[in-house]
Length: 161
Image 1 (cartoon, rainbow, N blue to C red):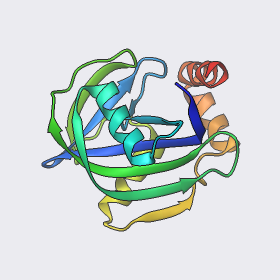
Image 2 (cartoon, rainbow, N blue to C red):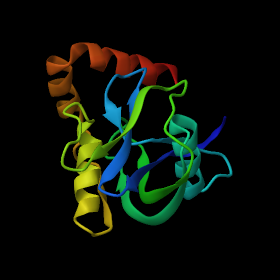
Image 3 (cartoon, helix red, strand yellow):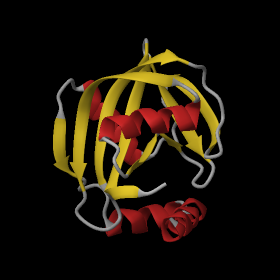
Image 4 (cartoon, one colour):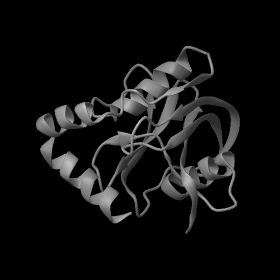
């Protein structure tokens, strides 16, 4: 698949008081389902496609809750949507080692910090548009020191995609 730009789209899939998360195979942390936007695809279409590919769940997007801009090459311009499931059941994919709904008050401790922040901003009820100031080389270095294996897997993934 061809990406149209260096952009990504993610979705906060809410079912009652729980949200859908995936645990990645390449970098074993919990994340919101999402990924790159392909050529001739809108951010909304990309978010819905990525959720379906990664989880087996079909969604209806209800709103855009975040639009984030990178400050360096570590991140991409990113859209975050709120959605609700309308079909399917969570299943594993080629990209995931686990998929499941988590109550908002019991999110996994190893939830990717940036995604945790997006969830908190969504819970504030306001649309967020801002720079991704938390994705910095300094933060990557601190994370690398405390989580070396995950960081190596992340870097390998970034270099090969």
